[in-house]
Length: 320
Length: 300
Image (cartoon, rainbow over all chains, first blue to last red; front, side, top):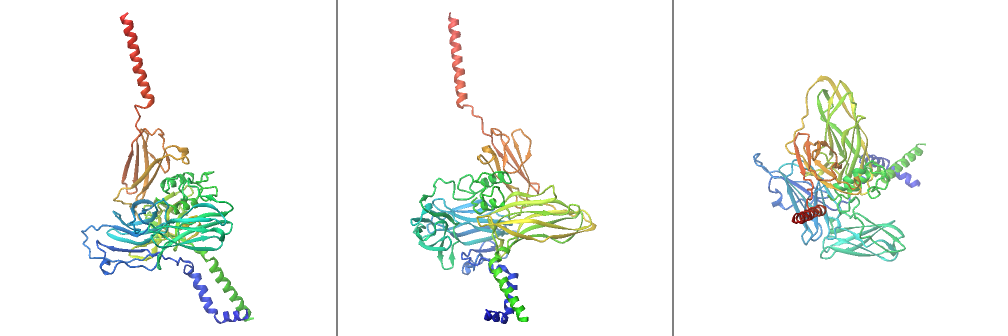
């Protein structure tokens, strides 16, 4: 202890500097630095990408990157306003692009899981675009959201969108020692990391097949009795790792209970059970806003009232 | 003695560092920015105040709050939400009887700042709404926000502490008749559906809609059911005509004065339903029977 104190006496000013620095810039400590899905965002004015002949897109270092430039413009020319989206989903899966919460366009990924889609006809304004994928069984990926300022006459490329896998489990409760099947879809022939979260986070690896399907038999003998969560992510290469899926809950107990297949929906906030969270569900929840005794299935936070918290849970799962 | 104090200071520093490392994320708040083009305006001069959300890197998907101002010094002309990052309003920003602007809305799939595609490394705050005020008398007053809540886009609706600083506005004793016009070249958009759901007005026919105008903002949405009068409505709206036989017109107008009308045809009456068909067959049968009786009587 005495030695420690001597050390602090010696480096007193350095400590003080760090304390003041972190008080002023706490985000340095707590920002999300594990952003390993580098979406690239580039823009240019005009019809042709000025970077196209010069070695392709800016690879981007983390989160998003910007760039681009302009060309000599004739003010009489009406330049198109285009937003291009490209990335990877699952082989032959459906990919949805939302504009301000409404489905603007859908496309189908190719057998290698690549997708690209573009749309035009936008005015100068701020738009919030969201992207998500849906696998062959209707399970959905996590969402990518891009609130972006679009200027008339520019082309914006949003590339390297690497969607998270989908995930499902075969049981809602599994007898300790029995297997829990964790499965879903991702990009083909790539490594899938499955996280099982209880007191301690455990990681397991699987590999997706030609169609992107993956399956892992989890031996639950290593887990404690009680509630657990599982989620997965896929790894394209060292620098490109997808987001995690939304976690799924399961119980390790004394009996096996198959997951209820007729359950309304996996999506929290899908109040009318149509496998989408959209304006209909929002309207149903808005009807109960600040009303007494809302139905339990609408009170997503189970606090006996409909508040911003319930709308937030719905907004997280929004599919358009 | 000196050594004792230095030891105490060191312990304090270590404690602060641990607290920062352990609980720093709790202090990581988003900000509501209240900004005007300048701080001093003349009497009768219209000016705008922007209310923007700086999430400081956090992804948020819900925001609600109240804005207060002194209505003896300032008059609220209107609120424009057309350029807002909020896609769906639970409570559209409106002035209440208590002289407070209340608002509540969501941003589906989250918002962590507006990306400028020409400078992707920097994210700008997102506009929630713009309020147009007018100075009433020479004064100095503040526009303040409290309380403001935002929710994280984490699937659990975690509430985040949101801070804001008051905006001071000085009104001079000069008079200026500057008016901020709201112009728009484009018509508003309207998405709508008529739905039935057991959790919404006990399964009756309900109109739900989302009116949008990214330029000027939506001034009003009105409905006309059959021969009834135009009435201003909010979504969800319980239809007066539950038979659905009357046609419906929905008039959406933006603050630029441009309107669109969408029409929904009524469900046509079915002439040949089961009951009508039986009735018709009965009438024909009765007619034949009466004719036969008449003929028999006539032959006699």
